[in-house]
Length: 453
Image (cartoon, rainbow, N blue to C red; front, side, top):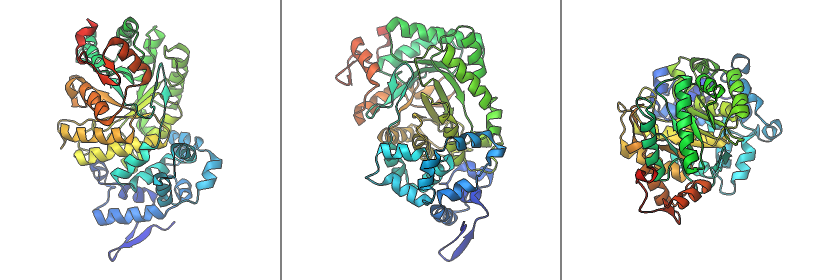
């Protein structure tokens, strides 16, 4: 491998692939905090030039985290289709990028190609793309998934109803949920982040959401985003869980910090398939986000974009119904301002979609970050153009339990109207029966939760 280049009279020598990958990233405060980012724009350009000339075989032959040391690496490696990889192993990263962006390359072409790629190759391509490139390439990729209903169809923008409550009050959760439903939000999932991580609390919330679904015959799926072990206990106690949830990291050590490993995920997978209430075959909900490995001191000197791509390589094993990157939730230590958040959201969406993940994004930021709601509106529009499967809906875009800023129920409705998008077909049919939507547009009844009282 050639790890040297000259830019404007200055010669840059990179020590190894980890350094090339890290310095080829667009500027991220997390990489700077880890001490691995480019010193300036010139060095970043130099790293991109070196990366662009590397072959896919170069990347696979020098793993950033060897499989013998990390189970996430082993899972990613085991998922590679060797026949397809052999056809493309001598492509450079620049050629991979060009193939993805070429007008004659369609979604089926990309779907086949993706089976021969590792997560590191996917990350490498993202590093060479502009924001518009990330939108264009992702928009070609359609990833459908089915739990109780199917989402991800072209022209569909689904929404997760996130009716969190600061005390897990069931009446409070229901009040927020009714507002979400009145705006046509909830086809991706009715998903609650619990305050109390106990099996009894999880069971109570699952029973409450399932009661609403059954009473109003709502075609969707429910999930409580507790730790996977807590959910497993609740399911064994008879809780009606359509899916099981867990946050993921891109390294084995990072996942240990979350209290999980592949063996536990395998056990949960078997449980949700045997005792869960979802139709399937897609019965998982995963969340990710750039920077979690650095938070756990489990990044192994690898940049946060590449680690995020590895999360999707791990998720792919379990054929999830939905995955989303909580893009601005961790804070400015990892994504300093709106420019970095917008870039990360587009990177994550592209990298997940390229690995055939049914990808959503929590378009969000924390209150100590250099960002505001207008920035989130910008990212939401870009993601809608890129064909994101779903985004998050919280009352007034303000999560009263997690204390961060996201997108509102009304924001998702506005994106659908503005971008010519629709809810999932089965959910839209229910909205029509309820009089909330007609001919693809919300009616005068929309936004009135008293419909459900």
